[in-house]
Image (cartoon, rainbow, N blue to C red; front, side, top):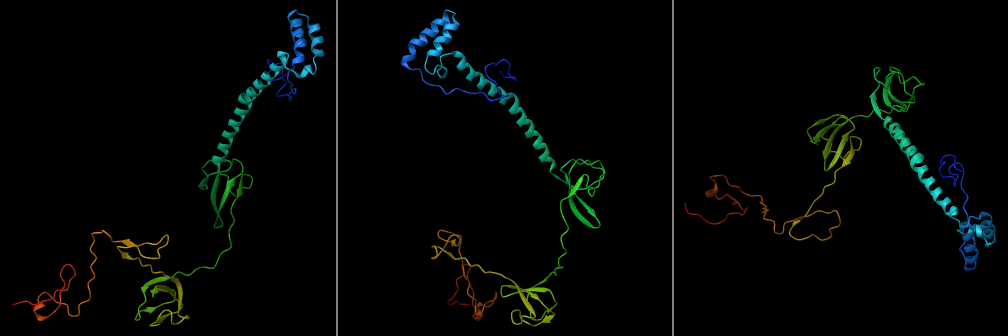
Length: 283
């Protein structure tokens, strides 16, 4: 009998695991004895009924008595109760507890003596000029500094100090007449150069002890045409001008450009479409 579910006397869960019979089918030859068994029960002769039941081959493995089937139903009901009344509430309470614990793993900023901290809260704290991160291993009393190892644990360490870097001062495009200082930076021929020593008039790329290459800039060109260029691969770009109303005009350099009043003197001029105007005029 179950000690937890006293209204289910046929099962013993969860105090111990119930034992179940491997059932066999009733055969045709069992019929007469089963009928005699049922008649004895209806007559109230339990002793005779049990004697007849013992004569049925493997009778204890055949569902002849309702009590055998009732045990299964009670075991199933006990399992459902156990999950609904014990397992499910336990899981839900643990989940809520875990959520509360996880939410405490949060950075609270710089430690403050007047702030209340909880276990798993993290703070930054500066001592001897060094700022480190600490985590509360238990709820510390208000004002307990993070260096108190009873309530706090250091999470970070100070790394070894590296060599100080030197910054570059960008001086735009290299100019032959400009005086450059050490650590000046210029661009020249698509490359960013750093000056290694004071210099003037020394073209970058001609003397490795004066200028050092820092970054090479790549130049990208994109075709502008009304048909797809050959050799395009995924990621390439081209500007399709087919059906595009934009008018691209190329103005060739004039060998003898005209001013407002110079046309009669034989100088050249374009119209607003980029066409060179030629011809004669009578004045």
